[in-house]
Image 1 (cartoon, rainbow, N blue to C red):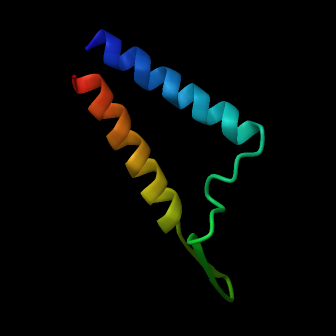
Image 2 (image 1 turned 180 degrees about the horizontal axis):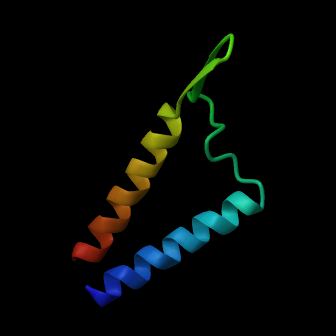
Image 3 (image 1 turned 45 degrees about the vertical axis):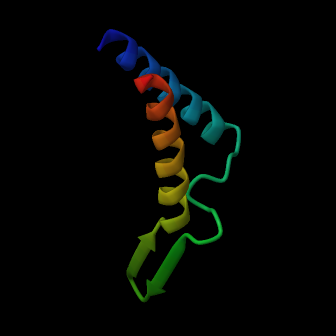
Length: 64
C-alpha cells in the first residue's frame, strides 16, 4: 500500500509539472465546450480517454 501511495503521488506531481509547463491537458482535440449565454458546459472526452489509458497501463505494470 505504501509503494502505491508513493507512485500515485509521483504521478500526480509529474502531471502538475507538465500542466505548469504548458501541456495541453484539458484542451485536446475531442474536448468539447458549449457556451450558451451565461452557461458554459465542458466535456473533457479526449482528456478522459488519455488519462484512462495511462492509468490502465500504470496499474497493469504495478500489478505484476
